[in-house]
Length: 296
Image (cartoon, rainbow, N blue to C red):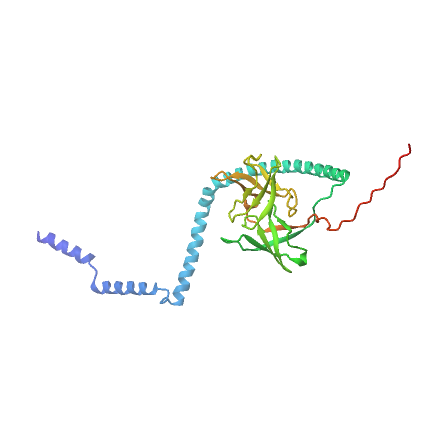
């Protein structure tokens, strides 16, 4: 029994730390904690730690790179399949656009011949001026934008402004190098429009919402949801045929227009040099008729 107690005591003395070693370990731990603070860390230790971090990041990145590639290979092939499908759809759209372009050119030529034969004179656009929208001045009460083109480029008050999607608005304030555009959604905007399918006339009235109203349609208008709305030119303010949007109904059953130019942000616009038809002269030149006697 005494021998067993002596062996246990020797074993405890073998694994027991001395007090000096405990104090040294405690001081060393305190020094490490103190040096871990960025403000108290010497420059040598900071550089050494940064270098070790760089080495560790490089080694870990090299070790994980093959596994990362294996993990992304599935999404890569899936993306390639999506791109191939998108490319196929775009090819079909391009072919359709080419067909429509050929049709439009044919109709344009035929329309020119008809106008020449009938001696029709109307409001036309002479040229277009390209400009960037530099500021959006829209808020709760006003819907307008500022463009970087003015009188020096040929912009005049009342000129229509269009984007690649459709009609944006018209110029209302023209400076030397800039102009303010009144958007179709502004409460002061009024534009004569019509349905492309049925020629149903209406007045597009802005109300500071994204969907302006269609007013003065009549009791039973020939209008359907999804009808393409274009400018009619009846107000002698806009060109005839500028795309505006699609006819929709709101929750109250009123007709509104989902504008084409709200499908994406507008950056580049074109200002059409539009000259409306002039009013008749107040003192017109009298027309003289000559009567010739028929030989009987």
